[in-house]
Amino acid sequence: MASRRSAARRRPALDAPRQLAIARAVMRLELLGVDANHVLLPLPLAEHDHLSADRIVAPEHGDASRRLGTAVEQHLLTRDPYRSYGVTLEEVFSAGSARVHEDMYLLSDEVFGWDTNYSILRRSGIEAVRTHPGAYTSGVLDTIWQQLSKSYFRTPPAKQEPTSQPPAVVNVNGKLETIDVSRDGSRITWKPFEGPSTKADFLGSFTSKALLRAAVIKSTDGKLSFNVSKSAGGMMIPAGEYVLASGQLALHDSVATLKQGRSKPFQVKAGEPFAPKWGGPVTAEFGFSREGDKLVFTPWDIWYYGGLGEEYSNFLPLGTSPEFTIRKKGGGDVIAVARFPGNC
Image (cartoon, rainbow, N blue to C red; front, top):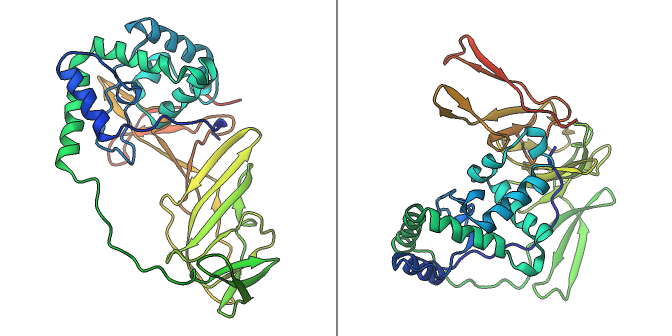
């Protein structure tokens, strides 16, 4: 399982005017202002998947970069999962991973203080730009091109608001109820659910040493959802087609999240108890790169899947790391066997 994450404010993404302003400053060779998002770890996030990962920050670039490097060594690499996997300072700055990107903001709040407003990250970014102006300028120009060549804002068609919310089906004290709420919330009515239903037992069929905090299944039409993590002995749900949508597991102070991953929709039939086998044993897949005659892969390039195909993230296995076997193409001879350090 993965280490616990505390809640922290996030630095807002740059809007188009600020991006253009920064780009003009760089093209005039005037370092008027640089945002850490563009230099430190500019990742392909959902809202800005056009941003490229420059990965140009390094501790040797200046005073702020050295302070950031020292903070990473003393307060980040000493914690799991970085400590367990033996992650180095160089790997942190060159990874370009979403995990490191988020942890940098948390690290700044903890070590340098909220009132610094991430100034060390920003100054590290400026030092990186001064050291590698070409790489940064190329990324900014690409951002400008993406902004100008794609439409990010569209006017949606007007919708006519219904007078009430669609009826919802909920499980109350083991019984299914149909609830109808008016649009303004001033009126609510309910009655016993009259449709086909069955008992689903996800808790009894789940295998793990961790505590299942939450497990949400959703109907494929998006109208129904149930948290089945507390249903010892099963719970009644309407018959239909569902997916395992999300959830959370905890073991001591470690927390892992789950999402649909590769799991496929499953059919729950009326009157037929449903108890799918899911959870452990977990299988792992990983991506890799080539560096000369070496194959290189890191903890953040690994994907874990459970019995239904559900995907686990922030997952740190107990004890010994999974064993990764590298074979010749087509299932031939074993080339190498590798493990990450465990978390014991």
